[in-house]
Length: 529
View (cartoon, rainbow, N blue to C red):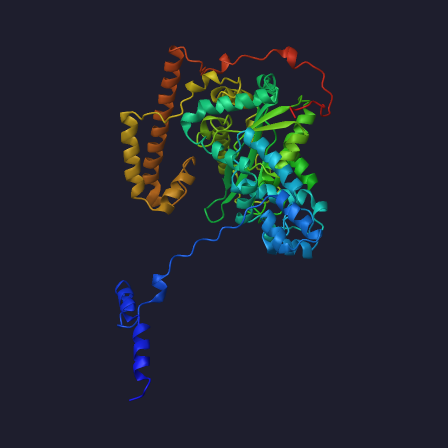
């Protein structure tokens, strides 16, 4: 029709690429509605962005080149530094290459290094450097150095967050490695290894002679005592006891619930023991610090105990915070953490002394005429008075059984780290006890356990016979276990084992070492710094 129609027809045929398009469409999946395929599915995955790496020397050279007149583009191209980085530093006059941009750090490098040094010392002593311990350290460090933080506590919610602690461990990878290594000491098979590590640590600190002096080897442990006529009004107190291998029992520190008001200092002196509030999530580690400052340190000065001294304690139950660590370092107190998960084998006070205290405590509760309680009641005074004659021998025997004194790394293999195999009689008794307790409610079983040491049943009359059967069963199980332990001790003695079950076999230390005249002040002895 038109003169140029043939020309345009030929031009359209030459530019027609429908065949190519059809071939490409065959390799592309069609959409569900028959339309065009999704274009995004044919795209290649985008590569992850990788930031350019450069050294502080390259950054400094590029910055100086820009200051000398070179353009930012050419300076960045020459030294391998991104142009936005140069632009920011030139604009804000950031000449030092080691200065990092971004939010201000909570703690400076010097402050963190001081914390790391204390954490390394605790790791050497067997303490597990975990998230909780670092959080306590950060919180107490800020409180102890308030003059360095004029703007107040830098952490949000007054304590380090989990993200800050993870970044802290990344900045100090050697501390993170120590954390993993110390976590390996969780199996009872590592007991000889623990003795070896502690011996190496004591040798490093120059305390080989100190660990052989019974007056300078201490331990600290806690026991919970309950008071109340019924479970609704029951009050739980935590009592911290300390003792040395010589058999001297320190005055306790009683931790009251926060609902009670503590007595005044004058009243506390009349009670002959110290009191404080129990730890909370915000005051973890405060109880140990109170015991060190108000009980342990005054007792050492009063008794003229030579320094340094070694303190064995459970590092998991009693968190060693920054304040406690610095206090021990200043007063030549060397803390050593006991091995976790086999702690019952290494607690000199837990085996016999605390059992005696709990028994005497139940007897005192039975003799009390009223169930009301005030903070002025002399809780442990009658119990401690009755322990005066037997405490020394009990404590010495506990140290001997735990191998802490005399310090015997070679004899640690004789400590029974596995549970003894029960005999046939005990297995039957335990099975019968489980069957009996399975038919009791949780409330009834709790009442039975709370009144086990009572002389007579004071609960509902219909449970009197059942309670008597349950108590006799428990007493028989205990007697079987006691007989098995005595048989085991006899067997070990016949085999030439170093365990000595008799208290008479504990050798007295030569008195010549303890007859030195010590003044009532802290000696300035270098504690292996």
